[in-house]
Image (cartoon, rainbow, N blue to C red; front, side, top):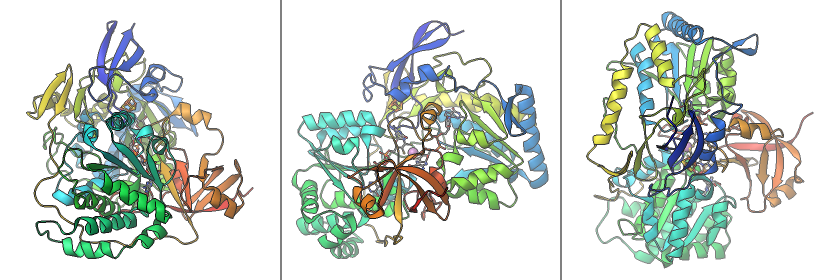
Length: 622
Ligand SMILES: Nc1nc2c(c(=O)[nH]1)N[C@H]1C(S)=C(S)[C@@H](COP(=O)(O)OP(=O)(O)OC[C@H]3O[C@@H](n4cnc5c(=O)[nH]c(N)nc54)[C@H](O)[C@@H]3O)O[C@H]1N2
Ligand SMILES: Nc1nc2c(c(=O)[nH]1)N[C@H]1C(S)=C(S)[C@@H](COP(=O)(O)OP(=O)(O)OC[C@H]3O[C@@H](n4cnc5c(=O)[nH]c(N)nc54)[C@H](O)[C@@H]3O)O[C@H]1N2
Ligand code: SF4
Ligand SMILES: [Mo]
């Protein structure tokens, strides 16, 4: 039993803030969770999603027994039976079709670094089938890295030195609240804040200026702003390869082109030009939504080029920022099995790949992921799960994916495990987790489950030894201790060597007659919707449309309509929002059924094109 005490830990949610936490434990139970005051980034505050764990660890949605689907219903079974069954199903699939018949799917359910150890299960079997490609930020990182070869590691607090801050498709007021706190400080120090969005958000509310543009028009807009920057600043002093071609390309984009694409008025566009040039240094902070498109990397590279042409690269308070890259804190040979031949399937088109797989996938294990909700073309993931002979999902609650599997195994969550690490993907702190509560009876650590399955398959226990190597991260020479279980990772400047200009300017396709579906992250839950949120949503999800679109389609507030495209359909309730860009429908991501409509396309880098989704608005069929 854990002693009554307070323990320091870190929120492991897939959230850029990675808050430092203080947990109070009494009689083995978590009774209070607060912000850790000495964390220099999160400064003693945690959001309601983090705080909610006090209730959720022992809440009614917590799974506490393995559940097996029998005749369409889940029934509790014992752990031995569950683990035997899992091992047998994997063994059978491997015997019949080879190791690639076993799918080991990892999502981004938490940021614990030790998660990687679990990959030893498919790898030791020969490689298995795993997912590749990103639903999240990899496309933008690929674009940012084109400028200097790296995405680097700077600090969000650099915004405190900016005089102008442009949030481009980023919504920190909902998705990264501690950055919003920095923005408020920057404003107090004299900075002005502007936002380029496709709708009004709490972030546009908190900004001095906001420009609402049609989704997908950002590339034309960025090229036009580059055009203005070239006219203003002239040629860079040193000759740059690729500059001339890029100059010609951006000079071809006129103010009229930008207005036509974005829907901005001439005055608004002019004000945006003033915003980016008038009050340097300017920092531009891009979000994740706008880069989930076919030309996402090109867009991010072009926005970075704007920063360069305006002379904001490498100066205090200036620059262009996105998410941070992998820091290589874990050694390259961590959880590696030489000779393993993993079959990789693209995450964004996972469902279709699984349905067509040869050899077929006949045993599937899902950890920290909810692909039946979160992946594009989710209908095909569900279809695959219906026909797959064996599927097991490890989760703490009944996710959409768990509900579609044949077996569900209940796991401990990060607050009930210790000795792992979280490295933020937005700020510079590495933090260690500690065990802050006893898990409820009946749940097991995810790693123990995976190891027990491996042992039943006759594989050696490489897991334990690899887990002890995890603590080596603490001796990385780039780390400086800043408090118990907390380190600052040294900066790795992105601006170095020669700047590389974009060499191609892609054309942006559209689907005439259809509406663009934009799905956004929301304040109250992280990614896949949690059970408590799902329960209050008995009505169809809310689809926000502009009042202009509503007028054209004769829509009224609260009206039920169906969104439809070639992939499927979804019933929604209409909400009129005068702020939303033209020909656009906005839905919260994570709501069940939304991703049935979302396009499974891949970028040239193999990442998702979630925003390249088009739908028709139709009356509900009764
Ligand atoms: N509360 C909360 N916090 C979260 C998450 C969550 O689910 N909930 N998820 C976490 C994760 S995994 C991530 S990746 C981040 C995401 O964090 P953000 O990047 O802030 O989130 P998104 O909602 O994907 O996109 C940001 C904004 O881009 C706008 N946008 C969409 N398309 C376009 C476009 O074409 N052009 C322009 N200019 N704007 C566009 C959207 O309206 C949206 O408000 O948040 C993290 N933090
Ligand atoms: N339409 C649309 N789709 C999107 C997005 C969008 O903006 N629009 N955003 C995309 C983005 S940015 C992301 S990052 C992805 C996220 O996609 P996923 O990673 O698939 O989804 P999550 O909801 O983060 O969670 C995965 C599950 O992990 C569980 N979990 C948490 N901790 C643990 C643990 O320790 N062990 C195990 N086994 N399970 C655990 C959670 O309860 C949750 O059910 O979604 C993407 N999907
Ligand atoms: S979800 Fe994000 S903001 Fe909320 S406590 Fe966790 S890390 Fe902090
Ligand atoms: Mo994400």
